[in-house]
Each structure stands twice: as structure tokens, then as C-alpha cells.
Length: 454
Image (tube, rainbow, N blue to C red; front, side, top):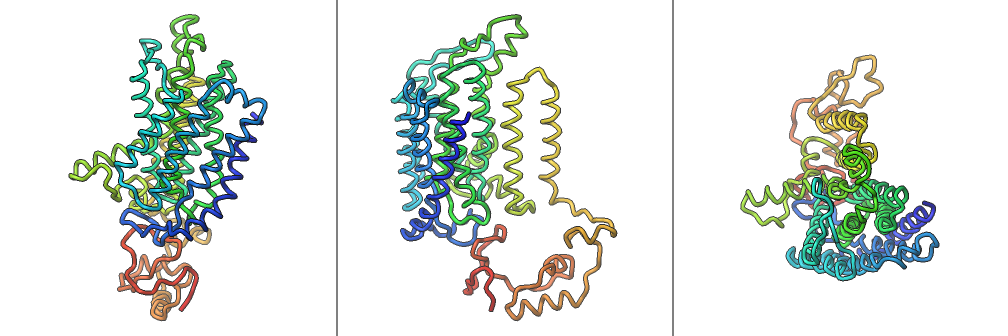
């Protein structure tokens, strides 16, 4: 475990330290695309954050290769080299897309080629456990097609969810943490060395995401771009393929004891069929809904729109940060809930806890639909929008006077104006980091930086 933690920390440190220089490089090379209709940010932001993440991946693999307890992963398996080859190819395609906007079909072909490169080097699904049937061996063509499909689905699911600051990196980090616990348990508890590569991949993936998140949290200073989102999607898919198709189910001794005991013992074997999808359940759901929505409207499945889950959370009334945290919550609930159930499948407490937390999550989702009012004795401790006090006329006039002079309104007047009589207001240009919510960009010629006056 100490070696895994060291690998994680080195990966995170390299990614974090390189993100700053990469941001300057992206600005110097003009990798700052214009604002698109589906974007939430309001100012051009440099991309190419995937460059730092890729070098973090290389650093993590290099350090792990020189650690005594992890060196056997490179000696007994070719999977780390297969991962590095596929990651390098998908990273180059992402960098070109961030700079030159490659066609969607070309990117799809590149994703399939990257998956094929990993298959050629041994990172493929050899067999799958099927409940009620047992272990089903796959032919080379079946394993190749299933591996390529899983890689492409995972990459695009992560790419689709990359719409808010820190959303994709945080959700993938949560998924990688849950996957690491599962793979490490298979390797440590059952003594199966074939699960060690998946543990290494997920530890490195957590380091990549944790190192990039401080630069990517709202308001983001740099985006990972397709070079980053496709990269972390491929690493996540590689971990799922490794632990699903390489671990021999017979090594877990699932056919010992009674039928009931065998069923519970077999659960860790069947979980890999669901775990890769459950840990990215929200991105996959977003991907499926987007394809259905665009096809129903007569559009291409690759056409961009503003109907993603994070867009809908903003439209409901959630702030940028709260929308991201809600997506984090649901990702963690699904991923860790499945992992906990795989460990103690006979315990009903886990099911009850997941149901209770799901109810809490639904309340958080619907929170903007309600406008609770605090009792009068507690009004001094809550934000102004929850108070019952009437609006003072001079405050509204004062805020209007400030707006006419081009000065920013004083703190708190926005809440008073929300309950006052509607007035014609002059639109305010967006700030440098796009802190305002979705909507059309301001057409005013004045594009002052956030915090400036006059």
C-alpha cells in the first residue's frame, strides 16, 4: 500500500507542477478556442491540460517500475506498456483536437485504433463470468470487439460529462478510488497477482486527477480538453478491462460450499461486469440520453447541445459549485455502494444506507424548487434571500443609482432586487472567469476584467 501511495503522490505532484507551465504554453500557442454555444464559461480559457496529465501518467509508471513491490507488475505482465502505448496515441489525438478541432468521426477512429493497440499488446478481455452459466471463454475476435467497445464507451462517457469546472476530473477520481478498493481487495485478499495492474492503473489515475483538480476547480484557470478527458477515460477503461478479463474466476474458489455460499462468494467475480459501468453510471446515462435526444430531434449524435445533466442542474437553479458537488455525490454513492455490496452482499444495512443517501440526494436535487423562510429569530444567521423582511425602497434606488454610474452594486442588494418590483436593468458584462450562469454572452463592447471599476 505504501508503494501505491508513493506512486499516487508522485503522479499528483508532477501533474500539479506541470499544469502551470502548460497553461502558459497553451496561451502562447493560441489553444484558447472561442466560446461555444454549449459552454458555461464566459471567457476563453486555455486548454491542453491533458499534457500535464499525460506526463503525470508517465512519471507514475516510471516510479512504479523502480519500486520493489510493484516492479513485478512490469515483469509478469505487458499491460503497463500496452496502457502507455494506447494513452500516447489517444493523447496525441486529443492535443490535435484541442488546437485544431478535429472532426468527431476522426476522433472516433483514433479511439478505436488506440484500443486496438492495447489489444495487440495483450490488454484485452479473455473471458467473462456470466451468472448462471459460469466462465465463458472468448475468441480473439470476440475479445477484441468487446474491449474496443468498452474503451470507446468509457472515453466518450467521460468526454461528454466534461462540461463544468472540475466535474470530469472529480468524478473520474471518485470512480478510480472505488475501483482501486475493489482491485486491491482481489489482489490482497485472494492473492491474485493478475489484479495488480488494475490497482496500479487506478492509483495513477487518482494521482492524475488530484494533481489537476486545484487548477481546474471553479473558476478554472485551465481546462483538460479532449487531450485530458479522453486520456483519463482510456486509463479507467484499461483498469476495468484488466481486472475483468485477466482475473481467472476459478482462482477465487467460488464453487466451494453450499449453493447459497457459492452465490455470495461468486459476487466479487460478477461485480466486474457491472462495476465499470456503475462507476461511470452518470456519464454513461448522460451519453445515452444525449444520443437519444439528438437522434429524436433529427440531429447527429455527435452534434453539441446544452441538454447535458450539468446544464439541467444549472437551469434548475443550482450554482456552478453546487451542481458539481451534486454530481460528485451521486457518483460516489453508486460507485462505493456497489463496492460495499460486493464485500458484504448479505448485509441489508448497506442497501438501507444507499436508499437513505439516495433520498438525501433527491432532496438536494430539488432544493432550488423550494424557497424556505427562516424564523425571525434566525434571520441574522441566514443569507438575505431566506429572510422575511420587507424591501426598503431606498436600497433599491441606491442599487439602481450605483448601476447607472457603472459602479458594482453593494453586497446584498441583488437579493433585495429579486423580491422588489421588476425594473429594466442594464446588462452587466461577464467577468473574466465566467462566474455567471448559462445564457447568451453579453453584447456590450465593455469587456472589463472582474474586479475593475469605471
